Length: 223
Image (cartoon, rainbow, N blue to C red):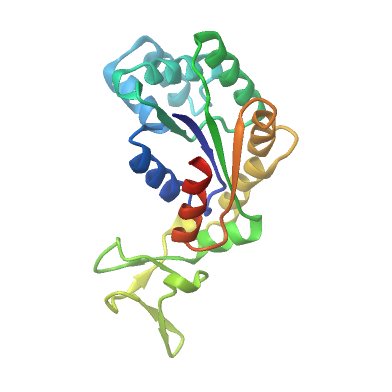
């Protein structure tokens, strides 16, 4: 089973991707890891990518797509893969799909976790880190994992520890830029998802309910 997964920052895409990967025993492929591995191994594509990264420029698709294809052909992908983090726009969606077609690699499913922009933003800005254990989930905007509150101060819902917020989670401008790209229906990520709707089985799942409810719905649709 070969899968692409999409969802805006704050939608729980990473969590749901991990659940799907474990359920179906497919390789979880992240584009960031592919870049790092190619650069550290000094591959031809890795060296080319590093040249652009060192200059603070985006790596062109004609380097990124072959790098991804090479990864999808490795042994651990024989039983299927879940690709996360690419494509991020319409042009990349077209380039990836055409490359898969040329290589005879079938794309079975495209997962789209649907969540409105304001809720996505709230979930990012609402994340809180526990000083005692970062694995304790706390989010001031999600009722199921809302931290304890007393006298206007939030404490960890699991252990009562002190909470803090990551600086990048509070950067509204940066969040806005990422969401501008994702929700763009003309050339952005959403445009890419729409492109796949005419070429593959796209499974849309409402990202608003709890993690458990979303995963149950997703796994049911994947069969």
